[in-house]
Length: 428
Image (cartoon, helix red, strand yellow):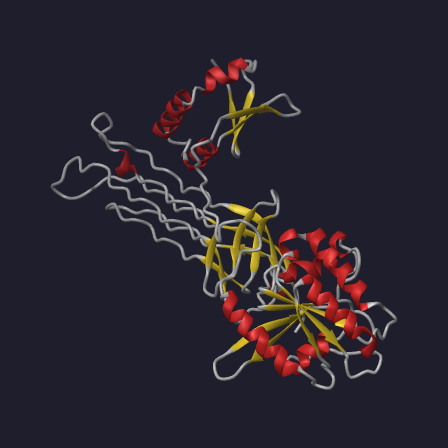
């Protein structure tokens, strides 16, 4: 199956159902009064982590997701039906961003975790809700509130316990193939591994950990060179790094210098990542040339304060010692997954925030555009064909002090004012 770790989707929550305007009509019950019910809530759009999904491939072909609208209110104060949520299954480790603002909305790291990324609109109130001492028989009801819509960027960051880093062809794929059931492509050329490979390493009954073989790192990776960004973001979540070097220097490289260069790239990308615990692993000790570099590598590990293992993934030498040490070290590090960035696991959206100022702008036609989330919702939910509904909106207009604000911006008689999706003509 193709591994896709980025996706872009459009989501739209359902609109709330319209409120009902009706009056009680029963025999022997004169002037029964308003009895229109409220509309039902529109469906939310929800992302949910599913263990059966391990790639974002589906979002290459299906990019639009829409929840159902709520049902309309009815007579006898009957509420409209609330719509079902639109649930989108995503893999564990999915980071969700607003495609327009770049803001991180959710960091989904736990199986079953859910995040509401677009909230359904509330149902419009029926005319029974507007009855008061001064308004005994209201004839108007609200339309349903429009559901939220947004463009989302999805990014998958692997949730592996152990990440393998090293230059291409140092033997990372051979190691993961030797210690797990994963079967990455293995060959003697650079970038054989073009996509991450996860392998489960067993430590006995009910004990295991996940190891990730990630595309090889080269100089300039922190600037996006080669597979740079794709490599580095996948090791952000790992708890332990196995730094693999080619002790035999098959490609004519110096493994000590390679170690320094790769750590420099890690530091350039993230100080936090550079401080992640590492184990230095010298591979290919079955080759005679390895003997020349092993003393220098052992001295390097001692100087850096790192654990050091010399192995041969191809010949299965010293693998048990390495894997057992890694398993014990992971137990001491704990199982908690740290979010990729300092954000709440799920951001709570507040579409009617307290800080909701009225903003007035001008367009190219010298018309006025009024921006205010609360006011835009009221416009969308008002039935302007009903005289009482219109008067209620005019009252809200005065409470928002819009006339004074527009006059201060130089509005003239007959000028068009835009609020939400509607146009109004301004008159004294």
